[in-house]
Image (cartoon, rainbow, N blue to C red; front, side, top):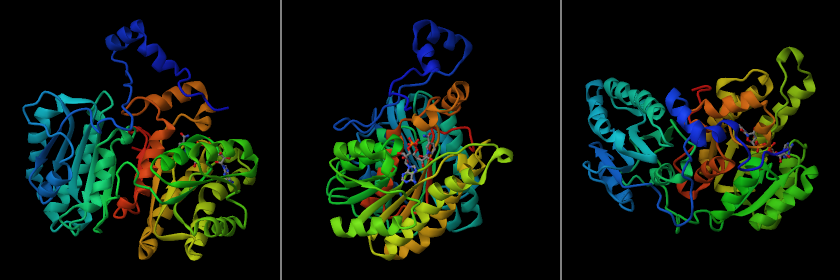
Length: 448
Ligand code: NAD
């Protein structure tokens, strides 16, 4: 049974009551902040943006971020602090981070944003620069852990070969500097050298695109379908035949079509390819969201549980993408988004099968990105942490509360947080983002 939205979340409920809040303050217990989430028409940030640094990106950043109200260092509240750290070419210059952030950080608004931009360390021009750029990761991840009240910090590495206009980074910066990235925290994202074309409208970046979402009948998949449709896509919602009514509901809600498809069927790829080519002339986006758990300690596991999980979560996404690409049912310039999990990064007791499948998805993304790049197709993965769905509602209460609290944002995420991240990857403007795995986990301590 799905846990209803807004259903009792024991700890959050106690802590938000007057006596609970008082006790929490006395004992230093975590007090989860209500995260600011995207609402059409609302300002992207909770306050003005302060830009700093003196690297190669500062001028293009000034132009790119000119839509955001600009802050002065003397202001008392900042909606975002953005720092161009590409000018840091040796360890001593890391002090620039201290000089910029130390006086400003206290004044970051609730749900505020920190974004540090650096040069991809592997592409740095010297040993000293590589060391200094690699150091940015420890700085950003630690700062993310210090921030309170729903504020987040991320690091964006930009290839030194990227053209000076910085178009390849725009979709990423817009995502990070908005309420759409509410549950993305402490992440490192690499932007390649390619240029990107901005969509006609940043409110409808997927206009004219066709997107397939597997496992769309409920949970995260249903919300991905909604968000992609909100962004302008025509959605093909796919799920197992038994999902019937729930799948039809998703399809109706998003004005798309429902497709009964067991992703593990031997003809799943062919069936999907035929559907897409006949009805839509091909698809632009495929989101491999269908996933299952069959938890048991390895000592007690049977082969059916093992094979079911590897089959749905890992083999199906690989095979279906291969068939769609081979048959031209995923168009040139297409987007593949896979769904991994923090269990694939940290490992999880009772989940050897699931952890293997979700780590395999990371391998799939990394191995396939260079191959698909020849057709200008990107492939990326989201790795959700604790998200409030039927899957996590099945976890025993104490572990569930623990899962919610053991992150920098001190709460579970909503399905929309994963969906917004998928939509960013799916955007035509994200053409320079490929081979990336971005956790949507509120900077969970698991596998950190
Ligand atoms: P869910 O169980 O609520 O929904 C999964 C959907 O996939 C269901 O509608 C199901 O019918 C469908 N599905 C299962 N097997 C299928 C098959 N063979 N063919 C087609 N569809 C199939 O799960 P959820 O919580 O929404 O998870 C969605 C994805 O996110 C999964 O890949 C899951 O592993 C991943 N994930 C979830 C969380 C979380 O906290 N909920 C965390 C990490 C990763």
